[in-house]
Image (cartoon, rainbow over all chains, first blue to last red; front, side, top):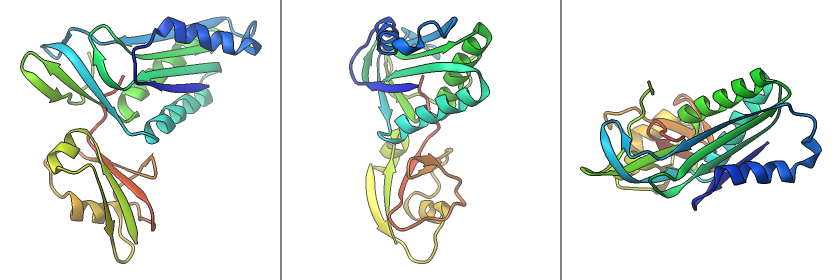
Length: 145
Length: 75
């Protein structure tokens, strides 16, 4: 179980590869890996986005991400989980977040990966301020379609 | 008792302060503290005590770190 915040651009696939390499004891135990990668798009809520600033609450953000992984582990049969989230200034096409879950079977991997991501969206202390063609503004929390 | 407060994102900008320390008497709740330092900002405000989400009815202890912030928008 691991949680990282990154202040600079990162490669989600390299993060996953490093995590697997760093945990050789898990080899042979998992049969399913589910991955979610969130990326900064050009367009959000009808506005063209050129960049974004992601504020967080140092200390609480890391703890909340760890609590979210621990809770998912209690509900799903998970072998390991990894959450990596960007903070600070973010450019278009940068990876914002990666969640990876390793499990024996796909139902637990898919289920826990989705749950960690959905709970992260509603509970993890991050706040987005977008730069768009009409200036900068704080993103207002809303349900995605 | 002494309480350390942090404000985040749009709420920090609206209130014009990021951190402050206040001294309170008695056994105040998060709500009592918010009434003194924030008040009615016309938007949903969430609170955390010592890095954990807290209901506004929660009683504070000396030395607590309380954070006030708008609904989160990460991911």
